[in-house]
Length: 543
Ligand code: ME8
Image (cartoon, rainbow, N blue to C red):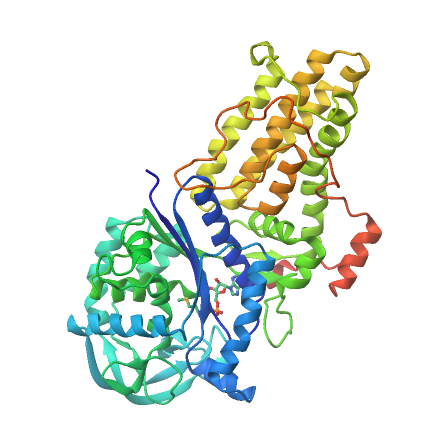
């Protein structure tokens, strides 16, 4: 039995519209969940919005709107962006929903019953951008937050505290017992180093503003926005709840094989320290993995409000298509490392890898040789009569399938794509060396059929291997080789293993090229439309 898989993105603040940084995390989570579904695992993919807190309250005020009206308005562009990008989430949690509020209060009570919450006076520096208190040590000169480059505020109020200090040792023990709890390893070491200094108790309520979940039994206080936000992963499933009360919670939290939180490195500490400590306090099962990916710059520059270079995904999807952008995100930067989004590299990868590599393989065989010489039908072949060169390509496909699986399971998407592209190159080389156009002229039908079948079947394998990253293009590819769209089904593993799935006699349907190559003038006009200088080059110093 394939056991359930739960994958989440951070829930994004609605103070701004979605940009490519948000898209990067969401696409990665979508790839993980699409892969799990292909393997027949019951899968739940959650994304959503973080709608409470001082930052949102202030932003609503700037817009002259009531906070609820403001967040309702901002939710729409997030939903539509994920749809445009082909991100097939199962749940979309908003922290202003009644279910979420109710479950946050339930968690609070569990932590309170444990004796982990107390009331005290508090005074410290607060960064509204981070929605987090900062120690003097963490600040730059002039009391500036290093993350937001903005002054912090002095906050003095009565507040509820969580006994985080009690959890230093339990967390260290948990880390030791679960060496893959935080990925990548270098980030795990940072978390451990931070923890080794010991933890202070955490202020978990505020009284100076209203936009949040009321503290149970003391509505003067609202729950600290990070406690509220982290809770989304459980509340979206209807938890915490007793067994049988919330089926999604039972299946995807309590019984999941894996619970993976994909986050940016900026919010790792909240996920790797606060979140497991809250869960330990409430005696709720912990996630299996927190995966902290790196930071994207844009054409070598940090994305920032002042530079006005927050890049929305919409125009890129319009120019290149969702799957191309998804491919670029997953291929360009090693997941876990910082990287640069460069329009120039995107165009280069499109032309070099998608148009010349995969697109060319399709066109040469499906739209040309098979159409002209085999009546557009998948030929039949005697597998026992294949030649060494055919077997080598089949072996390569088999090795690629297991390597790609291993890499996707480790969220090393770029490695998976590197390995899949070796198969694409091997298949193109195979076509170069077997020269099917000559076989057609020589009327060597048996050999021509063997070669065409081998390439068509390789294309079928590629349509599955690439499906998590490029679902729409893969189904188009399948349509062209006469296959139906991939329909993942629970408990059925669709990952390619057995050679020969393509049925002889199947009618192919060559259509428009999957990835038409951009010539120079098209390239120029696309970049112009996107407002990018054609010669823009990443500036390594700004990374
Ligand atoms: O932190 N490169 O929300 P947020 C890569 N609400 N990823 C980026 C990025 C960039 N330049 N910019 C943003 C919050 N991200 C909280 C989260 S979760 C319980 C609460 C991505 O809107 C990355 O995943 O500031 C980062 O962690 C997230 O957006 C921050 O989104």
